[in-house]
Length: 183
Image 1 (tube, one colour):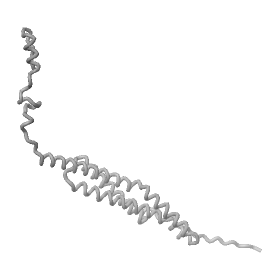
Image 2 (spheres, one colour; image 1 turned 135 degrees about the horizontal axis):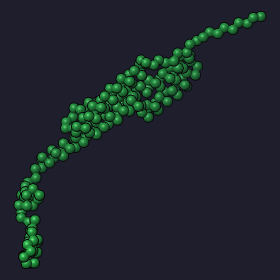
Image 3 (tube, helix red, strand yellow; image 1 turned 60 degrees about the horizontal axis):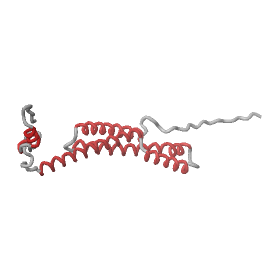
Image 4 (cartoon, rainbow, N blue to C red; image 1 turned 180 degrees about the vertical axis):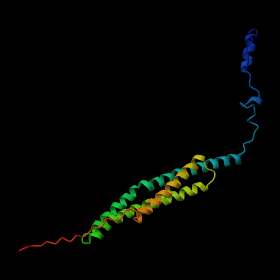
């Protein structure tokens, strides 16, 4: 920085302020920027690494969304469940009570389980691939592990739903009522 001396003439002051900076002080670090060659392969490698890190982060978020969807259900699963329920109602117009219950409630339940299991499996696959790819951001690794846990949990719940482990289809009990007439 230039300092102004009180006893300096006005011409000297304007000359000091309008001087060009030295070539050695072209940037803040004191390095001459114009003389340095740009390392293009290193710049490309850094751009590729940044792109790959971004892609692994996006894949981790997608895997987490798929894992969450496998637990909460999806619109397509609900739509297919309703479709199966309607088909069951049409098909069971003249069937037995057990067949009607299986067609109206069992098949849609299994359809939802099938779709949730598919989303869980997709979450597991995307999360596993994300964990295997390098380089990745630390937060992407954490999100991918969370997605993997959600996917495994979703697949477990879908399997339990599909095979009716905790809930069985309702059973219609037949009670015989006899009417006796006295006469």
